[in-house]
Length: 262
Image 1: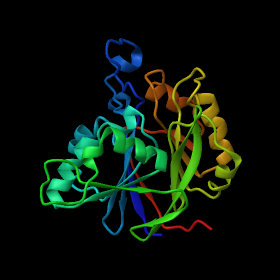
Image 2: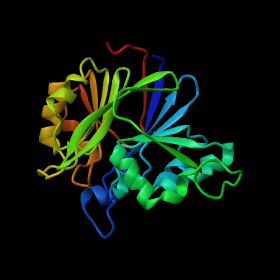
Image 3: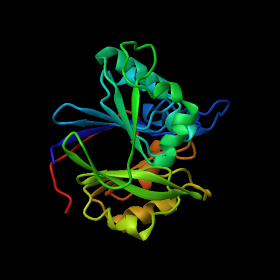
C-alpha cells in the first residue's frame, strides 16, 4: 500500500455546527475546531488520485476551503441527505477534467441515487453542464487505483450501510452497531475514524460512551471521532479523552503510512 493523506472535510452531523437558531457554548464558540460542516472526507493517494467519501451538502464550500480541484472517485457510505445531497457539486470536477467519475457503494444505496439523481448517471456525451457519474455497486473487497478497498457492513439503526477500510485505516460513520464479522475486518488498524454523535444515547448512532468502548475494542493505534453534534465542544471533549483517541475537526489532515492488511 502506498502512503495516503486523509482530510476531514466535515466532522459535523446532519445539522452542522453552529446549529441554526442555537446559542449554546459550542455554537457561539470562536474556536474554528467547533465549526463543523456535514460529514465527509477526502483521501489523497501518493500516486495523485483523490477519493471522496460521501458528498456532503457542504461539498462546494469544503472544496473551496481545501482547494480541491480533482475528484477521481466517490465511496458512498449511505444515502441520507447529509451524506448525499452535495452530489450535484461533482459536476465541477467533471467539467474541469472532462471525466466521468465512478461512484461506489452498496447496491441499494446506488439504486436510491439513481431514483433521486438519475440525471447525474450518464455516459460522457461531450456536454458537462451536469455531473457525469458511473454507479458501480460493490459488496466484496475491490481494487481502486491499485489499492484494495474493503466495504465494512455496519448497522445504522435498522439499515445496513458501509464503512470502508483501505490498508491500515478505516472510516466508520453513522454507526449504531458493528457486527462481529465486520469487527474481524478491523484488526490491526493504525488509524480509525469513528462516529460519535452526542452525549445522550441515540437510536441510530453510537454516543460518546459507546464510541469510546468501540474504539477500545477495535484497538487502533489512533482513533479520531467524527460526525459530532453541538453537544460536543472541542476543547472540553479533548480534555476527557485518552491519548489514543482524539477529536476530529474540519480541515484535519492525517498522513497514513504504508502498511499491509493481512
